Amino acid sequence: MPVSLTPLPFMMTSIAGWLNQHQQHAIDYLMEENRVLREQIGTRRLRFTDDQLRRLASRGKDLSRKALAEIATIVTPETLLAWHRKLIASKYDGSSSRKTGRPRTGPEVEALIVRMAQENQTWGYDRIQGAMTNLGHELPATIANILKRHGMDPAPERKRKTSLAAYRRNGTVP
Image (cartoon, rainbow, N blue to C red; front, side, top):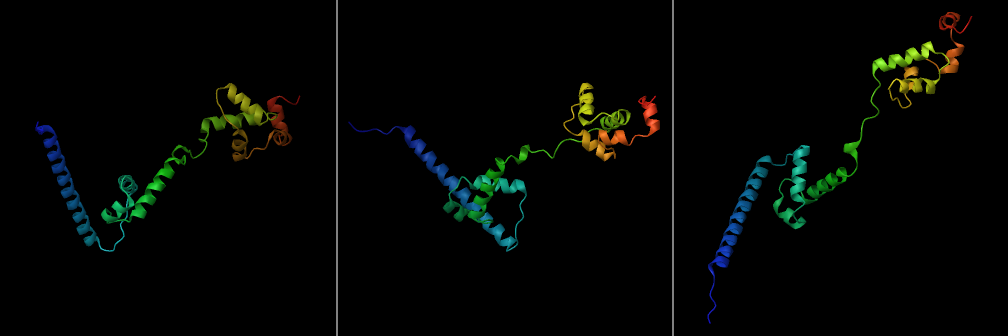
């Protein structure tokens, strides 16, 4: 019995061959276009934006070093692969989640802290922080820095340097 060829596998093979040939023509054109552009640029060094660098590196990582050597005209394969390694390293170094530091305390809260320290000479940093927490302000260890910025000493020093008029005004001296 003779073996009959069905038309479907034959058509699929023909279409795949045509697509492969079409892709190869497109690749050849783009490679020639790159050569022409490179000739026009000459020896001038190209400057890439971060986005351009990222796009080139992500496309280049899928190719082998040999394929990159044949195709890449504006950078060397080593440069492309180094860019890709740098991108991967920066992806996992945690720099995107880092903050610049603790947010600054608002001026009205800072004024309230200074007022509490002035009116209550015996209150230390912890007592002022507790009072602020009771008022709904969460201040992790910034009381000392705020008082230093306003030229105020710690509680024992404030108490010693308080004038007689301030003692009378606060009701601590009869």
